[in-house]
Length: 197
Image (cartoon, rainbow, N blue to C red; front, side, top):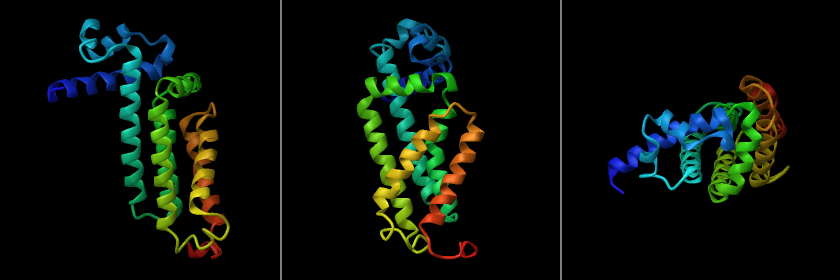
């Protein structure tokens, strides 16, 4: 694939994200995707085999962007509660920020079927970033590996985040819950007085 073709494919996938987010997977059509991308419907087939292929490309773009953003949040140099919050907020923004609440469950279900490999790679990579964020703060989180391992703590955070992300609430409410989760995590993994953090 030429560089120009790769760029066009990315542009179509970026436009398709808005269509899937607004209509869900089932109601999104290649015609709607073509309109959003400002190309003809036949032109899309020069870059994709069909709607499922477009959906996978959208998923790949989202996953790659989310992991890059999570790594940037991890290295922000901010206090640990803020870093945990920012890393976790990436997933909230990924789903709640791009997909209407009424279509979130459908989109996740479709992703588990159509893009299972992409979702598994994201979950694995994202868990690794969360674990690394916790490990980076071992001095502050002095109970890490005493109370539970960093991998287990990261897995618990991912599970809690999955519940928060799946709630039918506005992104601001989801972020508020996430902030509380980050603060509880830091409080639970440190023996130091809160003022010291």
